[in-house]
Length: 219
Picture 1: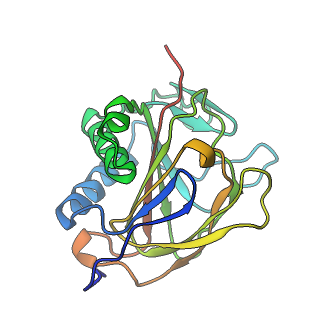
Picture 2: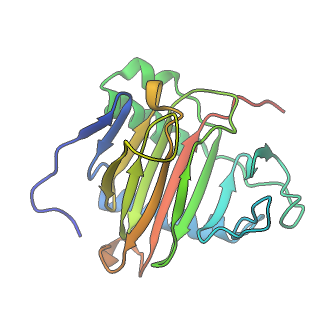
């Protein structure tokens, strides 16, 4: 639900910024509609199979580049062999605006060139273990957008999966950016809080998380 009193931005670690309520309700609706379209394909939303045979509890669809542990490709050979959907220019514009707003630096925003997005859907039982986003060949910041149910986002350190870490509540419309010294911090989602989202976004349950990244890849 929308907070009656806007919550302040916080910086849980150097280079990591949480901006509550960054997306307007209309932008959240737009993002939900776009995610439903992307989920249909050409490479449909799926549960990623891990190298040792485990299956992730979140469902994922990719834009621009197809991600699977621990690589990116243009073609989803692990799903249906189709080429991944293009990364939309308007989403890149949102990413540049997000970075400029989070860091208070228009130049940093203007220089940001994300070329892929991972769209993750969490149902009320889905979690994400502590991990680093390190399959990219770029150390540009990661921009994360949330719509739907609130989650507990655990943001850790760059050395290991354990403490110290900070638990941040990411609600619908929130922005979280991590770059600089925190670019390769371990992070995860130990819990989603069912029923906390606003149906006005178009979400009837669950959480969408869209992370924008610059891969540093060509071709």
